[in-house]
Length: 114
Image (cartoon, rainbow, N blue to C red; front, side, top):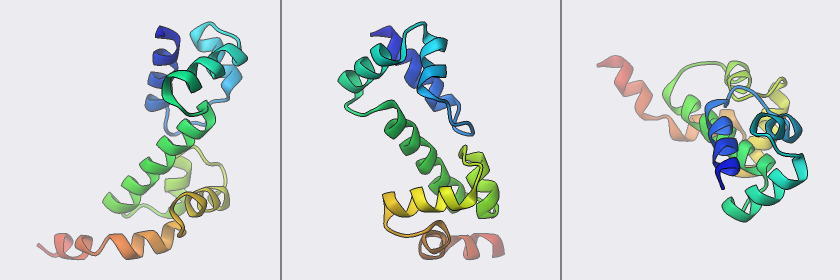
C-alpha cells in the first residue's frame, strides 16, 4: 500500500500545514474516497484524525521544549486560530495548552539557570 505510506509521509513532514484529504489524495494520485478507505484500513484511523494527532503531539513537544507563545505554537501546528488549537488540545488531552505547559514544564526553570 504505497499510496498510504506516501500520504502518511506527507502528513508527517507537513506538521505546520493542515492538508485537506482531497489535496492529499491528489498528491498521491488517488481519489479521496479510495485514499481514505485505504488509510483507515492500514493505520486504523482516518486521515483527519491521524493528521490532527501528529499536529497536537508536535504542539506538546513545542510547549515542553520551547518558550514560544501558544499563538505561535498553534500556527506551527497548522491552526490559524489559537482557539481552535486550544479546543482540539483540550479535547485530546483533557486540559488546555497553557495549563498543560504549566503542569509539565517544571524542568525548564532549572535548565535555564544552569
